[in-house]
Amino acid sequence: MTYEITSPPPDLTVTVQGRLDTLTSPKLESELEPSIAQAKNLVLDVTGVDYLSSAGLRLLLTLQKRFKREGGSFKLRGIQPGVMEILRMTGFLKILSVE
Image (tube, rainbow, N blue to C red; front, side):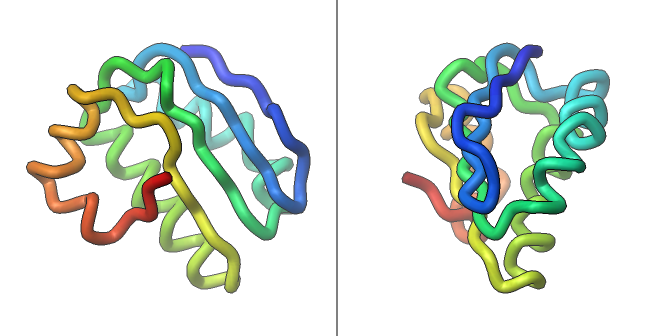
C-alpha cells in the first residue's frame, strides 16, 4: 500500500494504492494522523485500492466518525467494483459519503 497527499489541509485529499488490510490500514492511519489532525475535510481517493478487509472497513468507519464528530466531512472517491461490492454487502454505503 502506498499513499500520496494530493491536497493539503484543511481540505485534505489522499490518494491510496494497493490493499487496505490488517497490515496496511493501521500504518496508513498512523502516518496520516498529523495531516488529519489539521484537516476539516478529507477525501480518500481509493481508485487504486483493489482489496478491502475488515481492518480497512474499520479505518473507514473511524474516519467517518471522527470527521462527523468534528463537524467536517469524509468522502470516498474512485471506488473500484470489487471494493464497492464489499461496501454494499456490509452496509457501509449507507453510512459513508461516496463521490
